[in-house]
Image (cartoon, rainbow, N blue to C red; front, side, top):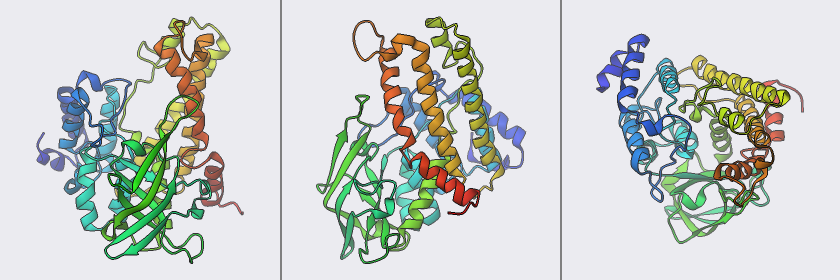
Length: 397
């Protein structure tokens, strides 16, 4: 599929769909069809086997970041073309070739606020899945009140010296780079004097300590900076003006648009996520089956709303405060799904260990416990509702 085909078909959606369908038929391996893990990429844990194959094929075509400019590793697709790609991937249940904060958060932010040098340096590597990123926002005393952060960055020639601590840093122990909010002017008002820096995690001044959760997993870390170094060239935007950029970045996170690439079937078939549970555990409770159906209706409406938002936006549009609606709804849907899967298993849904519980039973229990964090992760539900009330509905303080 040469580049000229996509360029020539920009105003020919039906032909473009045929080209995409043929490409997916030939190049999407069986492994990448159906539910399963999506690679985050990076140097520390690079994908292997079929995951590597699917990632490389999509990256070569620019399909890991379809709407990014070609010069930065994207496919340069229009909004309509992106919608067609999503539809065709969903048709064969193709999962996303790449996920993570690189393509979802800092990449779009650099496209909007980064220098030409920052874009050339970081974006192609993100698009190829070569670098994994983490987010340095929350601190022990600055969670929902993020503007109270105290991690300091002091100017030192052509670099900044960073000291402080971040917490709840997702995947920090597996990441190559961090985008980090730091205080660069301690005398300025709370929401000022903050800057956004890009920080190499592979240096002596950075230490990560995984946090063990009730589920037994450790997806989050404490991250400590002791004279860590970031170059002046890795300052995003203007000095002491990082608060606005940091909030803008969160709008990309809350929109959930980066997960739209993954496909899944939607009918209650043997491939449906709840069908094996209904079959294996012989659930006949009409009220519980009704909960599953209602959850699926809400889930489908949510995904359709996300897709409609993409379809109705301009090619160059960036997310607005409405993204808090997506974040709030998605958090509740994820918790609801985990709870439903535990209920469908009955007593097997409470398994922690032992011969009486299958691997899937134990995984379901731990996910049910882990997912409860979603109502405070990425901005608590209360914060999201405040944003919706003030910025979307225009209600008074």
